[in-house]
Image (cartoon, rainbow, N blue to C red):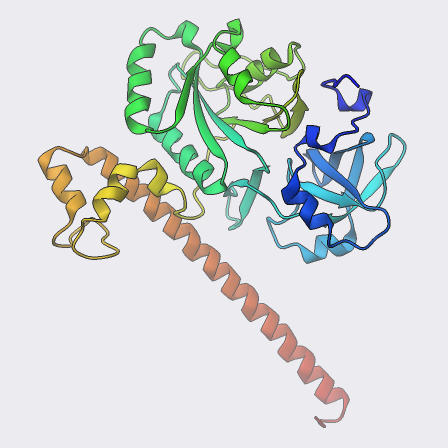
Amino acid sequence: MPRAAHMENTIVTELSTLGFGPFFEEQLRHFTAPEIVPARIASEHRGAYEVWSRTGAGQAQLAGRLRLELEDGGVPGVGDWVVLRDEPGPDRTATIDHLLARRTVFTRGASGPQVRAQVIAANVDLVFVVCSLDSDFNVRRIERYLARIWASGAQPSVILNKADICEDTAVRLAEVETRCRGVQLYVTSGLRSEGLAMIRESIRDGLTAAFVGSSGAGKSTMVNALLGEARMPTGEVRASDGRGRHVTTHRQLVLLPGGGLLLDTPGMRELQLTDEDGLDSVFEDIAALSAQCRFRGCRHDTEPGCAVKKAVESGDLAAERLEHYRKLVREAQAYELRHDERLRRQSERVWGQLHDEVAQLRRWKGGKT
């Protein structure tokens, strides 16, 4: 059966086409229901989901029980595999009964005062950081993205897009190569469909890739080029600062012609770290030097015998690179402290409610235990 890019117009008989594999199949062995309907979440709109199963696409919503069971930030995200109560269809909304464990998950700290992790992409194999070669070019932002990707368990790559409007592409490529060692780099022009062939080759049948980056970096333009049609909306960027409008408003999984899946995401102005996972992979040079410090857990600040500070003094390590590393560590630690405080307050509220309920029960029984 030919595989089409539009799920709503085709019936998919092989779940492997959608990224299903042994990791998820093993989880289904524990279900005893006679009918098990595995499906993948392709998009999410304010709590309403588009899901893909072996019979096609349809709408779905969380079962009330499941909604109560899942913690904040633990609700399904795009790319997740779930178990439905019934098959999705054009004239009915299926019910999501279970959320399967994730192979990988790319998260960020939710924007605003909320202290919780927001799922950006679940069960992706490759994550491409798309950075435009205009005035919005920022290597430090790339490093921040790479830390979260390494922490997710996915394989990171970097796409430097809009090479057609950049006069010093080679200089910026060299800067990224120096700061992001061991990461595959691509130079592209999404508008001219240049440099995309190697990216397409890396997204093999059954694999899932995701594009992440700032607004205006050209993610949706490249998705359209890889699809061979203008399906994703695109917009202009401001000439003054190179920033784009949020044209992509939701995360969307698409099937690529010839196999493979691609997840397009809205531009993110802010990517807050939720932990220190992944930082050692981005700053391998600092991690290697840390092993030579006199004290374990050295903060590379005022401690004597710090190999990292010595490398800065000798010129082997750039001072601004160490300072950026420190900044990201402080940010991650601050988030973890706020998160722990939030959990503590939640626990206190729960115990307080239990105490009140016990007191009411004793009063109702006339003070008897």
